[in-house]
Image 1 (cartoon, rainbow, N blue to C red):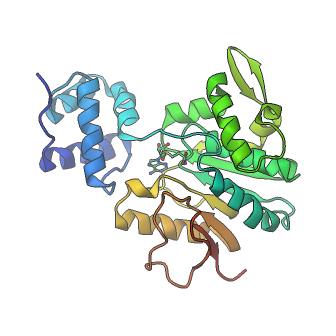
Image 2 (spheres, rainbow, N blue to C red; image 1 turned 90 degrees about the vertical axis):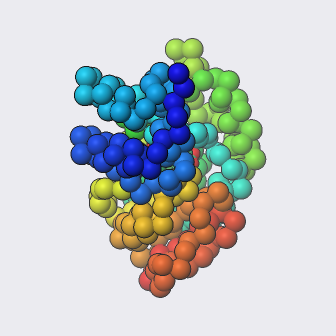
Length: 275
Ligand SMILES: C[S@@+](CC[C@H](N)C(=O)[O-])C[C@H]1O[C@@H](n2cnc3c(N)ncnc32)[C@H](O)[C@@H]1O
């Protein structure tokens, strides 16, 4: 038997249970997309209704890990959207270089490719040893993979093309060694990136940073949650600090007036006023 379309009431009930029992808040995520992902979870977990998901979680709360994997979208890659990285390199790195110890926050970092791309950019600008990249996400399995810093060699060859298109100074292969059947990123990169669990929906600011990168995350949020996260970012940035959202993201809406100015429209890079 295949799962019927998840009704609004059932979806609300499931999201309330997820919040209450596991403290993950998906209530303000784009509705159609959450519904689709719950549907996909039902099919993959061979269940037919929200009642069955709830009964499964009652019997074995650890199966939430599986459900969480379906509720989040983990598509990512290194130097994804090369023009974005070229813009970051030319427009933001010179500002970071003025700080003795630049701090960067990569929010919604998934399996880590974005954070390591940032570390490579910093390395090639001679800033890596004095910088720190805080890389956060809510998905424990993604964070574990990110912390390991091992990717498939096939993927790394593809990423090499994006790296070159983004204006990479050398070769991506300079930043990893082949071992354990994969590409292990250099210890220098891994030392500069600190991965941790942080939810943009429920947690608060944890450090003052000079650059926030948050790409392909807002698109999954409804307006009120987008507004919350933008306020969080405004609070977390130094005056004059940069917010980089990437070309697939929302254009900064008018509900944060007087806080940001636009630096690069295509790459959706903004600057906190007052620097
Ligand atoms: C499509 S991936 C984007 C990865 C990377 N930023 C990129 O653009 O390649 C979206 C990520 O946002 C994370 N995410 C979803 N909701 C979140 C939240 N409330 N707080 C932090 N991260 C969240 C997901 O777990 C997933 O890793």
